[in-house]
Amino acid sequence: GPRADGTIPEPTLDALRAIGAWMRVNHSAIRGASAGPFPHRLPWGFATTRGDKLYLLVEKWPADGRLSVPLLDLPASARLLANPSVPLATEPVADGAFVLRLPGAAPDPVVSVIELHYAAAPRVGAVPPRPRPPVIPQPADGAVSLRAADAEIIGDHLALHAGANPELGCWTSLDSWPLWRLNLHRAGSYRVEIEYAVPPHRQGTLAEVELGEQRLPLVVAGTGGWGE
Image (cartoon, rainbow, N blue to C red):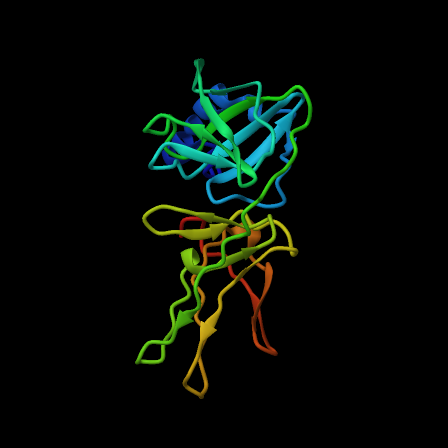
């Protein structure tokens, strides 16, 4: 947010410029759109829909250029919003999904958008289950590190922000939470340490850590900002 004198910090301006540049290209997938037909996020991202268009918001670009879409009907047309003049090829439905052939590199480093045109609502095919991270083993010293990237995200109102230091954010509802599965083999008392970032206007937020039948309440303090 703005400083006390009303000026906007340069990192915030950079982020807003990046969002604006992305929206200029991909606004069709956001403005006036609603949730896509899939029950949860897919391994490569998620989908939205607007009118006779279905938008695939691809966060993980396939290295082999083959994107599996769990729909039983082929689209009338497919294109990248970043390069709409070039149509994308499709391969016939097999095992409850069809394949989109994509260029080798993603047009956007964060989220690239593919527009599919359907004359009628497509039928959903074999949607892969929500991925479940492996059980975390307890190391020899007994201390277990619960990294954001190792959490199973329950619900749709919490997100993993990837990058050099992945973190959990955009947590907006009590129907969502992170879940870690541990294999603890050493009995004893454990100290729970949580690293978080909270701006002043969000201090006082209530949280709770559950471990088996134990519940540890927490009232978060302000840390100065989302990045501190």
